[in-house]
Length: 113
Length: 112
Picture (cartoon, helix red, strand yellow):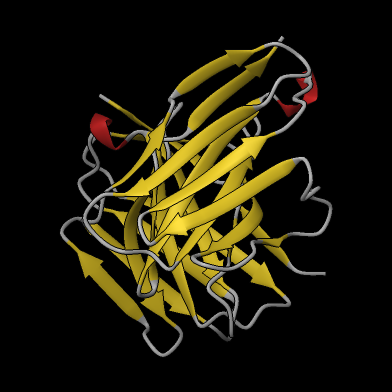
């Protein structure tokens, strides 16, 4: 199956700093990627849809100025958590769409101290 | 409001038995439904996709059914093994979009 990578897998940052997470589709091109966050023992919550070459579409309640998404190429989307706070600590997962199927990255564990 | 429900309680079964997981939804008209497996600290792994006009789909020891009248999908693992222990998520594709809404997942534990 298709492979999606994320980097970094874990990151610890201080409150007030920004963190960038990369999502890459390794063996296919993805015009659409998605960003999710997942709290412990909860389901994946869609944050935004990332479209190559255009602005991301954010879900209701997600601050677009706080979670900056860039989809600069058909294989790379980035999520930047700006001015991170402890409540942003979570598991962030990206996925890339290949036809009707979504393939997920391994996730990034963000801890804000 | 739109809702997807999976049995939030853990499901424990004996090795070799068939595990059956349920996904119920309300107020959706999904074009298709997917099942994923998620291990702790990892991203979901795609297992099976079933379309609204399909009743059943199989892949090795896995079987998925989709009843759009009952608004329910069942996910079966036959001859279960301890390695099948994980959380299983169902996801509905919103018609007209490529967005997915996920259920809360059911944690399956297969006992040796």
